[in-house]
Image (cartoon, rainbow, N blue to C red; front, side):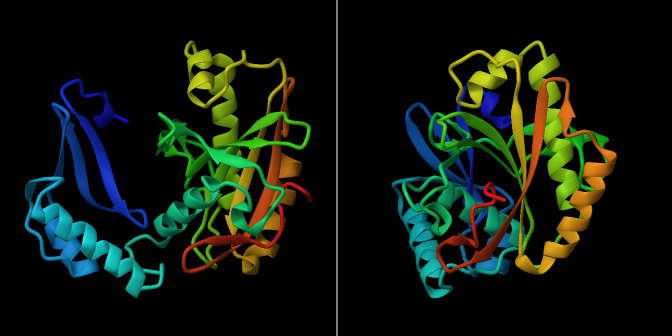
Length: 268
């Protein structure tokens, strides 16, 4: 978001299954591919031989890069090795959320990630970090912020904390903390109405909000999730003023080109 504030050019992070491989720069209506410190990492992880530099998006170098990663995705059957498996999982979750019907292999789930200009996922920044399971002043980020439309056509904000297969850490606490911080921003920030509009809502902030704190984990971590949920329900408020936080678990399986949820996480 900091780089997006530049008035002289548009700047984007170009990623392959969540791992940055280059930058895209748009300047004077021309698109450029920029490798700046990417050459060594791309060679190490993806066997791409392309030197750092700035190339035209229509040029041979950019065509070579696109073809290389297209072939790599095909040869690795959608399961390439990346530095952060959680980033690969996150990219697949975003693809699923952007599908039409049948997201995650479910017909009933109507959910959409919050997008900037209806194209780019918003990695929502927060002033509180929760990666230790406790709130601490610092840079925090929501893995995926989404809008979930219910059967009664009401829409909730949905905060997703994702963990790589068979990992857990402090997932439920992280999702809960980020949900509380987001709720506080919508209630007490001078820019609250602007945030709400950015999240895709056209109405005023309602008198009562319900935010979903969703943990996406492997089924193998179900017991640990349930223990942490029990602890949170005993020690932390799920009702804050007129607002509510709803805890949910999404048990997933990673496929070559998709993510499958075992069941709708919001029906429990």
